[in-house]
Image (cartoon, rainbow, N blue to C red; front, side):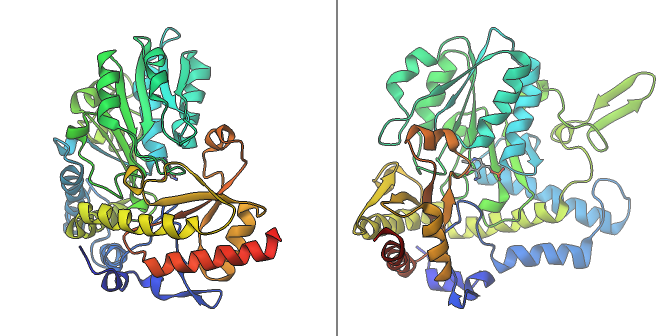
Length: 409
Ligand code: PMP
């Protein structure tokens, strides 16, 4: 394991204060903080190598291109992909899913087909399918969620039939923390001939993810939740599938030949899906984040979160009137504790905690259908990452008791 206090020193923002109090950042599921090396890798690029990629035959452009393209190899190793051709640069998870819907989805789905999602999806894995459904008229089904916050696997046989062409589901729920049984779900989907897309926004940053071991066909995730910068993400797909898919955005860089008379042909993978000048500094920042995480070891990151979540669930259980959403067993979930507190609105919880320098998230966390399922409009979520410590959980508990004293009595 690693030394958390020493690790925290690498995150400049964790040394700052909020409302005059030392910052306690428990909102990493929304976005993670960034270590100095990630920030500096981007600064270095701007200071020393800034140029457009793939275009110029000059030293800076070649340097920028090498750094930018080199990150693909790091991503390949990080998720155990087969080739850099499978690594598509996007802006975030949301763009990855929209890419899948608008390329594979638009080219494949008809009114005779169905797409299966689940009742615990982030809006980014619901809305792109609803938009497409309105245009193509396929059926959009979802796997219900149990009272315990897990997928209702008993419902799967009636939902997963040969009409289903894609099963797209979240690996780790951003609200419940539930870790879904990906390998088993992939096997069942493949048995009926459906492809599988995994929303890895909350898994790739927190645990080892091996696309070949999982057996999935597509995976999307965001750099900003894994110590990297905003505005950057990865869409991974099996090469033979990507090869067949039409492009997403059109423009410079994604073409082979453009002719006004004969039309255009597309660049080889992965560039077919990457139109226009990309987020170069951000790619380099993600590369530095992957180096940082790899050095720590993703098994260690996961272990740290299990230990901290175990501590948190025990400590939070002592707060009267707390009701958790999702699994209680830290081995069955990611590093989140999502709850309601009797008599205190989640926004009042968050505001009271903020006065004490504690950042948590309150609201529906872009998962309105899931909150509807549990009959509540909003919840409060404390989410942990590799830099959080038990003393921060203690401060959260004190803060919740304060909110209770202020609002619930
Ligand atoms: N899926 C899940 C499970 C998420 O937690 C998030 C971010 N909250 C997203 C998708 C969307 O990620 P982004 O906003 O980076 O596209």
